[in-house]
Image (tube, rainbow, N blue to C red):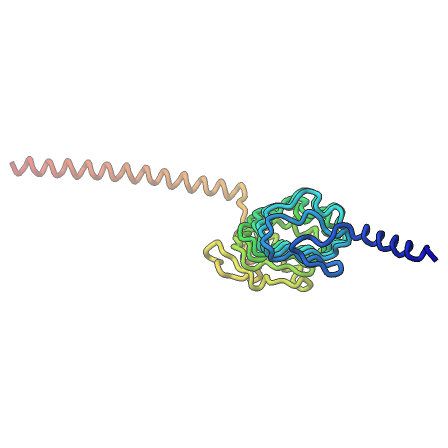
Length: 283
């Protein structure tokens, strides 16, 4: 009869051990959801319940995250870090967070999406990097390892170009948002636009509203309004005969210029002598 209370106590202790730390100060915990949003936090909570599945740290003032912060939270499936002051993520942040499927990094201070930034988060399905106005570059290997990624939001940043290599490694991508960036639709943009046109039938995208900022002749034009004909000038190549012809024309023009100057000089000299002779006769 005495074993009943002991078994209950042991079970409770096991559950407590599995949950790990209690709910962090200034946060609200319900089930596996930990909500620390809008608390003016300058740093992440030092400890979380080990079974945390949904963590919101949105609308705070967090500027950095310690390396290995998520290593113990293998149940984490959604992480909301929007509207903070993050400019970079530590290497290996997602080690241990293999179940992470949704990551929101919008409204931060990222200027670069670095190589292998999300390599350990191989289970990601949705990644939001929108509204990072200083975001100027996406490394060609930035999204390596994200074969399951289905939705990627790069809208409203400072991107003028993006490497096609960064997107070709995302076979599962079905949603891509690009609007609100200052795209430069020059010759270097052609491979990306060709890829985008090939994916648009099965890729939900805002590329119809994404517009070119430069060069001036296409400023304001939607990305997908540019066709292969728009880039014809990028494929003009000169043969050896063309270069020889240009050189010959340049040589002829130079000779003609010299001859013209010579004739003008002779004419001016003759006019001067004629004018002087006329003055002498008058005297």
